[in-house]
Image 1 (cartoon, one colour):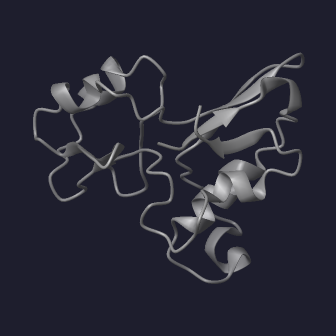
Image 2: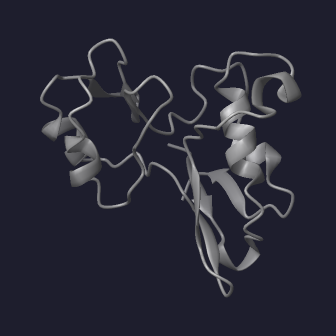
Image 3: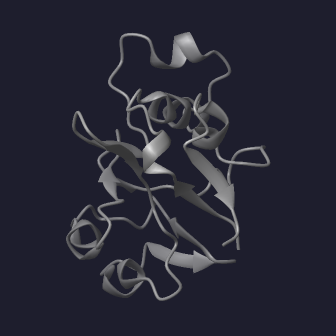
Length: 142
């Protein structure tokens, strides 16, 4: 299965992956209208400092502890992709506590969100990959 990988040595820390992710998941067709003057809620996050920066997103583990720990049964694995059913999520934050990669976060609506590889969007690769100017984020099988 293809996954998102980050080449830290190429990451500029520009946060464009976050903006492209937030836009792709906004359901809108105009990026300026979707994001300008608003707090964004991307499903990928840039971490780091002056020396190194890298994007953090869901690793879509083969044996995901977030799925096992979700008390509401809102997180499931479907075709290798870990997905969240927002209608079932109760916002208990257990998945944040157990994820060893820090890839889950609260969304704008107060329920959990995470990278779902843009599986709900009509595209062949995730928006963060398409929007990375330095090709630090790749979508490939390893």
